[in-house]
Each structure stands twice: as C-alpha cells, then as structure tokens.
Image (cartoon, rainbow, N blue to C red; front, top):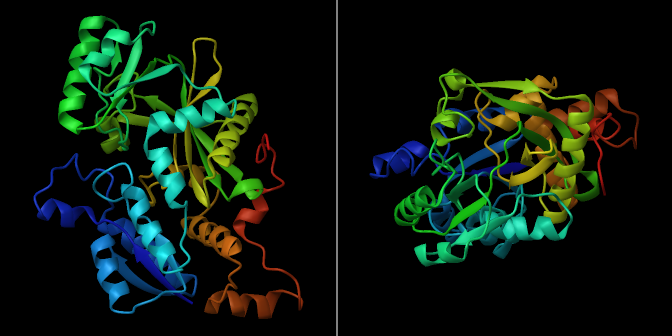
Length: 363
C-alpha cells in the first residue's frame, strides 16, 4: 500500500517571508520525518507530497495514492484546513482525519460552539465581534476572554486575553480585529482547571485515550494557554494525567462533542472548569499536532503507555475501517500469517481501548 503524506512545512513558509506566529501551526521537519519513518516501519511505502500547491500539480500529472495521511493546515481563510481533503475527495482518494465540513466548522470556533450548544454540550456564553460597533450590543458579565475566532496554537492569546472591564475589551478586540483580519470570539471566562482529552476513532467507535491537566508554572503567562506558553511548553507548562471522576466527566463531554461534530480518526477536545467546577467545552482540534515529544495528543498517548508507532497505527486503522480498505502492509501480512488463525480479524490499538474504563461516554 502506498501512502502519501500531505503537510505544511514550517521552514518553507519562513523562508518565503512569513513570520514565526503566522507559521505556528505548521509542522517541523522532525514531525514529518517521524510520521514518514513510522509508516515505513509499519510496512507501508510512503511518498512525501507536501502542501496543497504541490498536491495540485501532482494530481494534474496523474499521481495517485492508496491513502493520504493528511496533516496539512492550509494558510488562508476559514476553509484552509478543508482544502486538501476537498481536493482528495474530488479525486476519490482516501485520507486520514476529518472531512472538509468538519474542518471548516471546527476552525470557526463560534460556529462550532453553536453546534455543540445545540447538542447539549456545556460551553460558556459567547458573542462574535465582527467590528468594534458590535461591542455596543455585547451584554456578557466580566471577566471575559477574547481570541481570534479561527486560529490555533494559542495565536492571538496572551495575558491580556482575560478582560475585566469595557475599556480593555475595546482595546483587545480592536487589536485582534486589526492584526488577524477575522472576527473575535468573546466568551465568559472559565476560571477552573484546564484539561485536554485525546480521542481515537470515529462515531460510535471513538474512544478516549486519556486526558491531562494543563498546569502553568510561575514563569508562564498565568491563566491562559497562550501562544508563548504553547511554543515554550517544556519550560513553562506541566502536564498531569487525569483520572477518576474528572476523567469520566471529561470523557462524557469530549465524546459528546466529538461524535456530534462528526470528527474522525484522532484529535483532541479542550475543556475547562467553570465557576461551579463543571467542565465546559472550549474547542476541538480534529487535526491535532503529531510532534512525538511536543504535541499534546502524543503526550497523552505516551502517558497512557501508547507508543508513537501505536498512535499512528491506530489513526490508520480508523481511516482504513471507514473506507473499507484492506490493510496490506508487509509487516501486517507477516504478523497475520504468523500469529493469527485463518479468518481471525486484525485487531488494532484502537480496538483495545473500547473496553477500558473511561473509554466510552454518552452516545
């Protein structure tokens, strides 16, 4: 089986003149190399494709793949994460992770919150500020939290994001509107613990891998998972596994949002406690980072005893199951022939999660 890999390489965009923050969501050479090598170790033939412009040229030249491992983030617009999946769908090429609808919906945090609110998922009250004039009609109690409506990796979030008065609200929103050229999401500030939940699978087969609390050190920007805190997480942030009732509550909320939004294969749901100590939905990341030692999903998998290879294998397993693809890697064929009785189905890392305590939630 030949697997193509689509991605946006950060150093290429930096070389083209984009800034550090503009390229924050793009991947390092180490991440791409890790995915590529892991796929090869699993027995697949790989082809590093690159970004959407390269993909477009190669499709026009007639190149095709049995499956594409897609982690391309895109550069511009609310549909930027959806561009590569849409192009692959037009050419009937299977790919990993969520579809264009889900990727566009979840990138726009206000739209995603409207959907999860309708599903009954707890989320803080919010307003969408498209211009400074909208602030005259904003009627939410302070403190508030403001961030660009369609960014990730903490872009546009810093110590000023928590707002306690009208003057600062105008100042922060004006700056964000000008800098990011997109609406600002303003929502009630959640004062409690912040947790992120890792999920593998699709629909009823989705399961929580585990969760961890994000704890800011004294040297970090306090109370917010900001761009600087994320970029320098090794020095500024501690991560603690969650368990017991907190994990069960996080599982229930995260899976309800994940399944309701239609997310696929793997990703994360970010939650935070409200003033009453109840977990509320902040956002979902259906195209989570896969740096082996830096990305939150990989850290969650590692703390639960799952290797990086096991994580990549589980993602592939979920995608292949959705498309009805036969697993045809060299390693898998040898493993089946040697270890499994004839006719016994191959079982993935994902399948082993299904019976675990805390792995299932509200359907």
